[in-house]
Image (cartoon, rainbow, N blue to C red):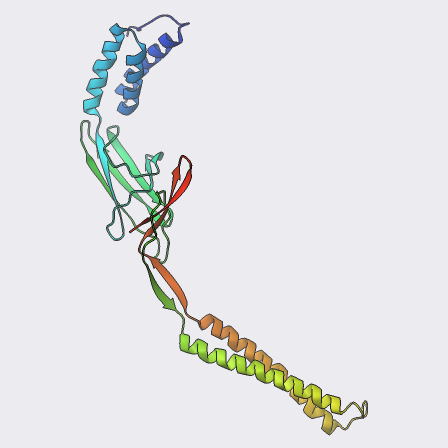
Length: 265
């Protein structure tokens, strides 16, 4: 194989030689997209004699490179525009390409990732010259209550559906019992202290028949307080909690100036 130039000290000539030779190797190995980029460099840097070879090879590769189109939807069949797209483990971008994407012939794995959803993977084998092969995938949220977060752009929030868990009547009943028990505990505690004050004149030789009722009041006060705290705890756990199931996708998108937020209807 002849070399296009021999001026080793000329950076432009060195780029020409590297692109001219590497493009042919990439083409033989089936790496047509990489060969195409090298041939563009060859066309720009090589002398006319060799540049013509690069232009011809580039035209031949152009017709041999397959292209794919992506159709990605969510669990309700709505189009997904923003998600990480990886081809054979290499990041293609954080947005679903709208147009055809040149891809080398052969076997490929396309992976679509969005936070809050399990990744979707599609494996295909592309033939040389195949055009607009559809790569279809569905990205569903991991649970009905999850909020999907993915690269996107700003948009207003949409509707949210709600469902409740818990038992409202039971929560009310235990709440009332708890409040009543704590109130009773307070009354008994105060009554015990007042009765004890009446016995201050006979201490420490007060009649046991007068002391025992006071101790009973304090014991009942403590028991009532325990019942109140327990009842209020049960009421708290039985109080209905709202589960939100978003009908929209809340999204983040990296922009040159920062991040934007997007909601998909």
